[in-house]
Image 1 (cartoon, rainbow, N blue to C red):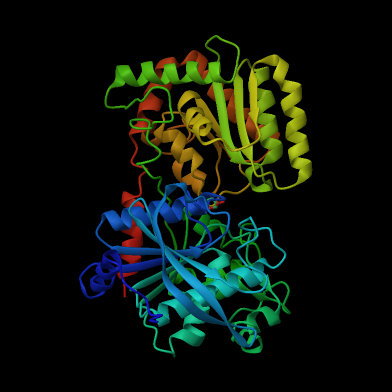
Image 2: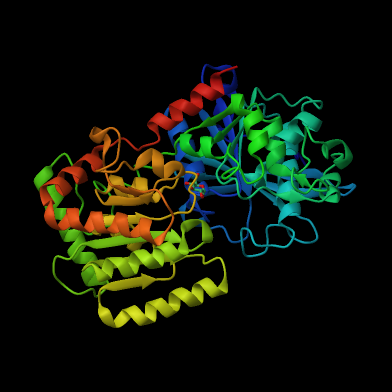
Length: 512
Ligand code: GLC
């Protein structure tokens, strides 16, 4: 029996493109939307890959084959490499490599057949052996590239979970003949770094004593541990993060999560590229999940249909009728997102005569869930507030379309996608001025260039900051309706697609 890969047509095309003018790019990540999504990382991997494909490049994405993948959007799932053996703890573990099509994307999935079923746990993260699962995956990916004779121009890995890719390439696979022109690593969130004990690194056939060195992977706070994110920064040819402001912030003591010295040292290879949003999915002109589509190209219909979306949303959620300003938020309920500030925004909005919709998912502690359940119960009788504590995709789209304003009071925010989506839907953001929020939301009173103003910002993650943002938004909505409508149209006509960010990535990819 032949165990080598059998190339279907699409694969053959990919391999030929290696010699053409277009690039062959492989993304390696723990998530991709919509089949394996926890946060914005999944949207970025899908959105960027789609745009690169549309621009004629050959793109593959490699993820773990979790047993909880949502296969509904997947077609043509088949095995391309049944017996991939990858080294782990002194033996070679068998893996099956699968391929499927996800819309126009080619997604490969690695399924390890180890005793403890690394990706057969019914979840993506949250396992005590997370470090072993994702470092194992990283080595299996490179083993697969070598064995299947894939030599992409660019290997692009994301966040700590695939941070060992550039390390493994330089320490092992380059010497074995794998030929990658560029290793790119993207930081989506510096607060997750992957601190590892030596034996986890040794289990992969790397040498922890060689790597636990100040110039390599040694953690700068806990020197007995190895820091995978640090390794990625040191070994990658270029390191990107998801907005220019976050790229600056992570080089400071306040924002550097212990890696500011390192990031300063490597600032010559660090670039901030703002994320885009996928216009084939987040677009009120074609969105099938909203009640009435609208486009800024037809102004009358824009205002009419957006108002109908608001009415539909309020009816769906049983909110009291009338033209009160409606503020929304769609967020994971985790510390980063400013939990106290979300609650403050809700109360302030209602106190000042507005209505509020919160969709909050994945609470980071049982206590957070309890807190919001309690709030939900206490606000229900008012009919001015709706709190949804599970993600619901159609409701999320309707919140973006039906609300007047959208609040994002994050403590820190590498990029943030929801403010970009709300802008596209003509729903004005009220955002804390940090990271990617500072690069996309410009205040109507304080932005240096008023031509760019498109929302409301506040500097401090405090009750006063939130109140200031909410109060000015509500006043503007109530007293300056013409200005509000002008801002809505301006927001909805911005180019927030992947077109521009993809061209920045391509510059980096092609820059030898
Ligand atoms: C992380 C960040 C978020 C960013 C997303 C995609 O989830 O917290 O700000 O938008 O990654 O890059």
